[in-house]
Image 1: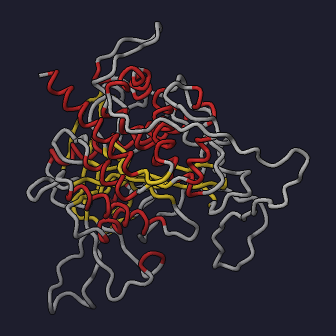
Image 2: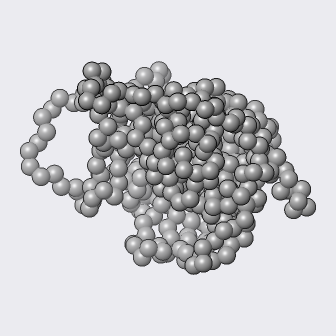
Image 3: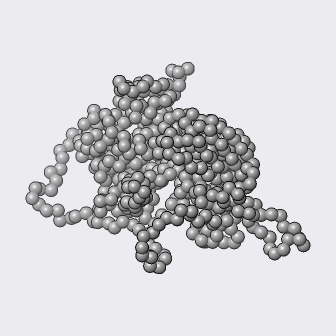
Length: 486
């Protein structure tokens, strides 16, 4: 049975490699060998030129940058190919997708166009700085179990002037449509769960994507205020017009919570006892501004289930804070609530994928000038990561003497990459042998460059509020004002 499973995985991996080569329509062989060099290199990728030292890269050291600058990749066809492979599923058999934004920081690249100010964290004590770069919205499929594997499905670079919420909604719609077309979801299957962090407007995503078989699960800030359903209007007794919203549910005020509809008590290995409470049919009070400014007619009532998760301890020793989740489905039972918060905790696996792409595969290592070349390099690494995921049970664990042995199902992406070089000769390699050529002499020594590269400013959002800022040191209030509008 193991031989049949390995043969199926090897065939799926070879088919993906052949389809990936077909998606490369210009400089195809150079881009394909560049991807193989990333998979077979020793240690983290520090430079594209250094990848030419690997045996799998049969071209010159300048072919990598030239292929990224002048090559072409059929992204739509590659998206379909990545969706057609086997995908991980949650414990109950449903698909769980996570979406998040990660940035390729380029602070000193003044000749790079379409740079945006990106949020960065941890660059100073209690400081959140804005650094120019290229932000990318990534969608991955999550998997249960104690590991850091995900299945990247899509990547979209946010261009200057793009609305992140609109781009995310369109991106999720395209991904779910491809999943349905590939047969990963059929009528009668459980809904696909979309998991996101507090930076996303969950109720709006659920409203915009209401025609898709998805359920939205997002984390909400601890200063939010939601509303209960409006009480029934009784003619002749109730005065005034019918109410649209009920009483307030203030996250920071336990006196407004009332009795939860569902209570779950779970004991975990790392976090200790985890009490989980859920309240049904809570919605934000929307207003005609920001995302809803152009909405015609009455604003919708977007009801959902609020889940409060509070752990007993954290592995780091920090003081744990409660986590508030909003689920777009109402009427959840105890099992669905228990699976919901566990699915959200798996969302943090996407952070391990970002770290693997940046620190090991060298996503942000090359100094590319054009954003189009950055997009090609991004898709090459996403394809490389997918090949590693499909080769999890095909490679041999080449562990270091100080590393603990692990079964094939629990190998990390970095340890699978060590054995990929031994697996590569057994896989399809459609790249052709390079033809001998003579390098261009380039600009003669001593001749100045009469065609300097154009310099581009960083895109910044203009302020609509023209009021002058108040002078003096701004201090954060100890008790922030609750956010009563969505």
